[in-house]
Image 1 (cartoon, rainbow, N blue to C red):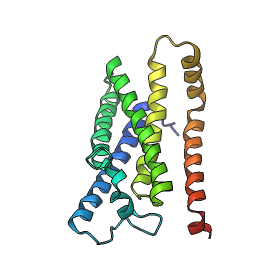
Image 2: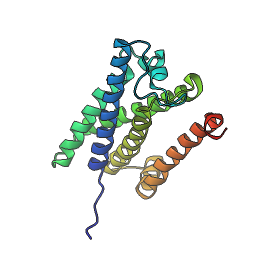
Image 3: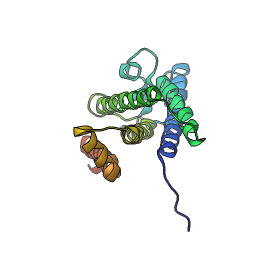
Length: 193
């Protein structure tokens, strides 16, 4: 049986495709909510998984346009760039830094919106449950890839690069474990109650 090599471009392509699809579906639900106010959304499953409660909140359009529309643009850009790498292309240093910056911003913004959803809105959007993990994968593996592409690293950057080479999955699953713990603690009354 041949071992499947999982490379950064494949991770970026898959996570970007998941993020793009989820952002598109959330945007569709947002448009449906605006066209049919008062109607329940198909993605509102229970009091906790409530897309309408999240997509209708002011925080879901913090920069003006809905966050899901911005997500569609960013995930589409990252998907295109991943396909460039998959086809044998390379990135300039500027593109590497830009992708790292976008992934870091997505990661921080996703963490902020996750916290807002948990502790302020007390609801989670079904599609965000796919977008947030995609953002985690994109950030961790973009950082790992970026550091591996650098010719000279020293000090803390070298240590971080070495750590990510050996323990990237620990970082990813550690973040997922933290998010799941926060989720189940916040909604323990509903799920265990």
